[in-house]
Image (tube, rainbow, N blue to C red):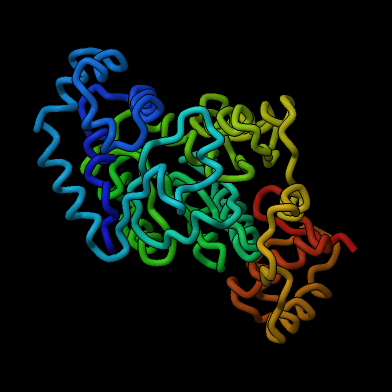
Length: 362
């Protein structure tokens, strides 16, 4: 990928030790683009960031890291997006502390799409993971990019759902974009790099450090028009993302669950605080209708899909039933049954129940 002129200056600012996001914004506000910052007299720099930071800014200490990042950015599908770039996400400009730059691998065009964040427990139940994947797929079919944090559990399921349709997915990392964490999601990260987008504000090579993840979470919510929480305990990091979404003026949604499950308590707390209760994908899509991508193919079904649903609905009955039983009744595969149930749920003809059960509504 072509490296933009002036990128070295942006990298030098962000890679200078001890120079935080606030100091960088102050320098840019005072002097303009990084080239002007770096050519400013020492005394003027000191008046903004102090003598120690000004000295580091003028030193050659960051030169190897800057050179490494420039070489990295030349590779296909790699990019470093700065505040001055037209592809920088407009929604991030609305948050209090937008990163000066973002390292990206994959499809930059996803940054221009409407987006929905989906987050939740790393220790998700099988039903919670299934809900996350099915919701994400429905939103992706509606043209929304699915934003999450590449964690185990709900995050991973949401990314898989996003990859299944044209909206695709953006994984915001708490490490450098070249470091996969957790390692169990290495294969998923590779799929996202190919068909979605990996994104990080942290320098290349940054490992997983606890304080990175709350910062990562503000970007997950900041990139999206809304944030959906699926399964979260009261101490879950997903609630940090939800709070950031509220502070950023985003819509917050939560899926309720059993009153006896610890993984429902975080979602129930959000609902008590004003988050919108979600029972179907349509609940979210209705709220975010203004952001829908024109021409999105949601609701378009192939003749095969129509036939599967015509087979499925009469055999559902009106008593709760699981997917395995429906496979036996219909002769369809589990994937065909799951896809048909999702479309019927979106149409308001079927309800998903706790424990992986489904029930016909009309």
